Length: 208
Image (cartoon, rainbow, N blue to C red; front, side, top):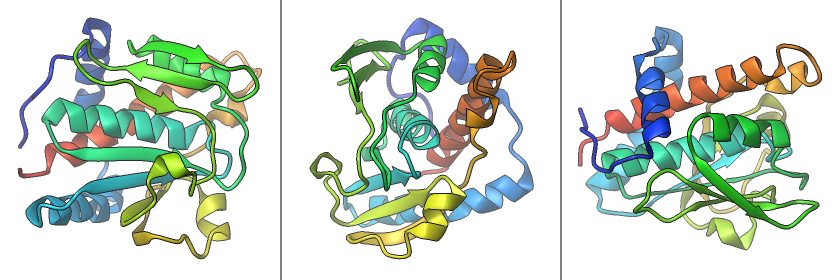
């Protein structure tokens, strides 16, 4: 089991501790097994770990997954590069951005229609760059990577993803269903915490 390698921002550290205390069901552990095996194989071969989290609009679940996976990798000192993309360009949804801020990340942005967000998980690390883009956008360095499919629509409608070494379905329910309701913030935070919990579990299993 990995131990903490980097000091996270204080409010984020508190969220991480809560996420790591959540119970992950045996069914979800089985879902995550292929992702763990892919990362471990890359580490054992001393090859770069590139993970591209893909959802249709690259606006909610894939963004959460990229941010939490990169944060978990940084936390445990695993040399992984986490990206995200979609099959349509929209924007990193403002509700998901708000949830990330509530989790304790420091967030800044530039641009208007499809802003680029710069997300800090520590004072010492480089910011995570997050904006809506196609899965094969040049920023994703799409060469020898695992395509982690975070929604059923993208998984079922992208039969071929160029450059991928392994296709790994890790699907999550869309918090979009609660947009405009009194449950909106709670449901976005619930999905973010689920993804945080699972990404921290994945990287905690990696042996350096």
